[in-house]
Length: 428
Image (cartoon, rainbow, N blue to C red):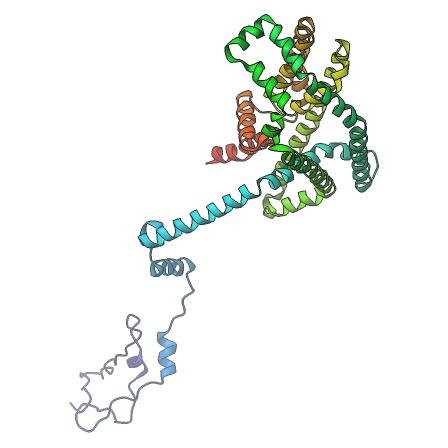
């Protein structure tokens, strides 16, 4: 039986040119189909040439396959290529450099804060005073007056009140202070004649030392560093008062824009929550300052009326101012003013001193258990131990202003703790 040979120019059948799916990049040639009754002979040896290669675009069409990108796989490959970035895998030199740089930045910021401590205290105090006056502005605004007009009315009333108060009080206060200083040795002598005080003075010789200091004028050197120091202290007080007044009025006029600026610092999704928290903080601080003004006014008026009633009218205004100044200091301020006024009353006579001491003790109880709970119940919700710690810490760090601002600051921090930290911990 004869075998049919394929011509040299003939191509293999189409079935022989099919590529296997498992090897897309290689090509195989299938054997020719068998003829009936006999096996197909292979290609003849000799000068026969290999089949013509297919064009490259056919092979590309058959072998290439587009796959969609996988973002997770690409991120995983990029993370694997970048290597570990944890702080544990950094070099000791790099860790030390970062820690040193952070320490230097923190030290520099601390130095700036310490250098600007007095200015920052004035700014914060002015902001708190503006928040204390803002309820009055809001009340005028709700009554129909534009906010600008309401701010102007409150500012003018504040300035006029300060000018009239200084014009009416300073001359009389100066005269009474001079009388108090001139009669101080006599007051000390009256204290020395008191049996209980004389027994205490016999052990520590306090009255004699105070009398020598007052008569020699050494108290000026001790308090202010001499005449020049006293002048510098007075100028510093006047400058601080003027700056505080100007900043308070500016904060009062710009309070809505300041609030909006604070709100814009939060993401848009959390802005309503931030508005609520910031508004609640401002309300509590303003309520505390307004209530404090009321407490001081009541204490000053009560002291002035009582001192005139017990026969200390010549010193009533000066002692009432002492009560007003110390009433701004939480916890210890009323006690200091009570002891100061009682000592002056004891120098007059023992009966007046006892009556004065009993009056201030009773007034402190009324103030602590009746007035302050009613006035501060809605604005400040701070436990008693925290009030004590805050007042003492603020007084030690920043003086009278620190003690004054400590309680509303702690109230704001407690609000953040209750409204932000506790819910976050509950959700964790």
